[in-house]
Image (cartoon, rainbow, N blue to C red; front, side):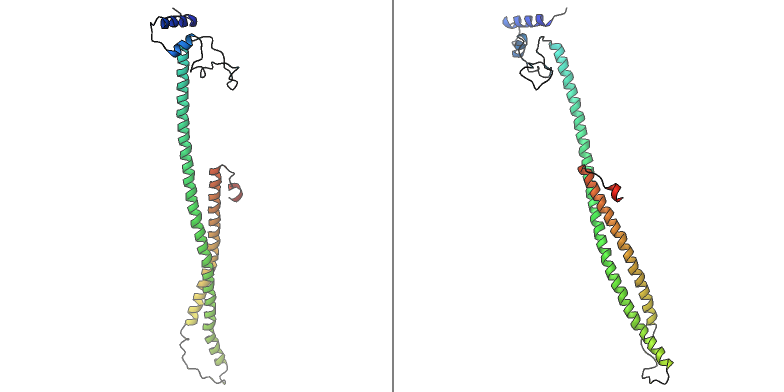
Length: 225
């Protein structure tokens, strides 16, 4: 047997009047075709008074089973959307935390590279000074040999030096070797400084690029790398 909306509302109304069933305010409203709390999700309402909600229609029937199924479907869909949204939020949160962690690591690398560059730059100055001091010491060491050769070339010139001098012990050769080693060390320090400078620059740009990516800005990889 099929009961239409009008017959159902009429029977329920009679039962409430005769106290055959417990009275329900929502059922009474439905029987009188008044507004219900479930009207808005079901797109029932008066479009003349609620212009912000497009698609509202006036309620002309009351079908509790159909409407309950519709509400259940809406609830299930809303729950699924909420679950997906929460999963997406957690995923984005994990990605953001990963980006922040990567940015912190790049910042530490940038700081380390900058400190290493400063150290290499200072090493260039100290190694160059050591090289120049070695050049001066080598000239002073070789001066003894030059003076001795000059005296031996002119035997008629008076010479009051002793036949043995403490400086005549291979010191000039040691000074020359030390000077050459310090020269190579000084030139290597210049190359190492340039390598450290480029490493510091790339570390800085990597940090800037990561920060721009996290903030949604343009990346500079195509410009500097």
